[in-house]
Image (cartoon, rainbow, N blue to C red; front, side):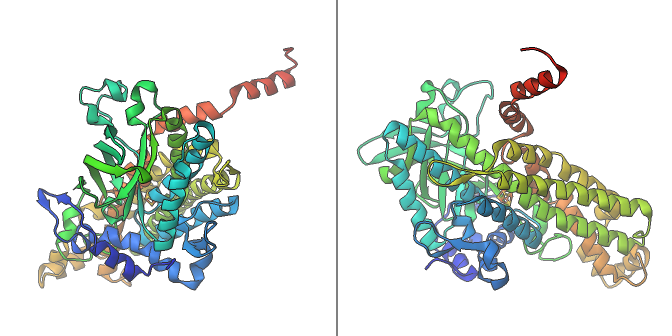
Length: 483
Ligand code: SF4
Ligand code: FE
């Protein structure tokens, strides 16, 4: 079976034995939990769209390993065309879910681990790439969702992993034997953790010899013994427990992050993909980050499309659509959003083949893409709030809207254009609130800042890749400065 149906995906999650803490309690049934379910629906959409003939070209491709049809989320990019299609697929899913659909972290991790293990084996004579390829084949055959896990909790940011007061601030190897390794530590902000079948762990920074125990990469089932999750809160998350469909803004979809704890987890050697080869830690981090910075030129743009649409509808419903400043703000939002998309497409089309055959994006352009993502969604959100007006945050609850007497008073005083049903205006206000300030703001705003690395991380890469010396030479030549 190369493609799972959305129903098969949901069923496969029900069979897993996750240990998840949410608001002080162990979750018995994550798939149906009202706070988790919308995030599962977003991942499910990656399976759903892959079944539709109109999206076949974007959502599926042929495995370079088996020739079978696979979901693009399990693909290793075989060309720049694949890289471009990846971004287009992410924009499509952002449009359809208006949230983070989570499955990209694993896709980006697998692509980075593929080329890195290949080059590591070539230099050091290790055998990691073979193991990784076996894992990838299983992921493709069973159409699995993999969670790429990179971000360590890091403790004191001024200290290297081995210098930390608590040695567990970075995931590390605590024991090695002839069967495998035992690891301990935690990965933070893990997107889609409890909607995934497997975890692919990677180190979080370039490392030196003293940190060799921290230079570790491996795969393990997401419900393996010793792994547990502490589910992250989002603003307005408990509205999902109220059972309505208006106050939540987006009642069907969402995203989630969790703290993923490795409490002395045993990993057999066949699942270990790096163990002490600290010289390759930096390459893996740089490539994974590059792919995920490319990703944001797709997913955030898709969510941006929904937000621009919501702002335009708010203007219609408020009776303000003809005002020239409103039109101009919508143009500005579109301009910013398409600039992000241009960056996502540019770094993809300028990609190149690595030694393993897998294509890598242009790293400079991918970092420029993500640097813009740390800014433009904030401006797009500001303009959406400007156009929507204060009602998006002062409106009464859904229960008041449905109240037999109070509901009529609210409708009388809060109705906008006479031809627009009052409920429609409420729904659009709440959607703008959801993306700019509510549960989806995690993915659209703060994740735009810190996801795939905080702004300074991109500036370091831009400095490294910018080639100032060559630019100086150009200037000298034009100005007639002799070398
Ligand atoms: Fe995918 Fe975007 Fe979510 Fe990352 S933030 S997992 S790229 S949807
Ligand atoms: Fe992300």
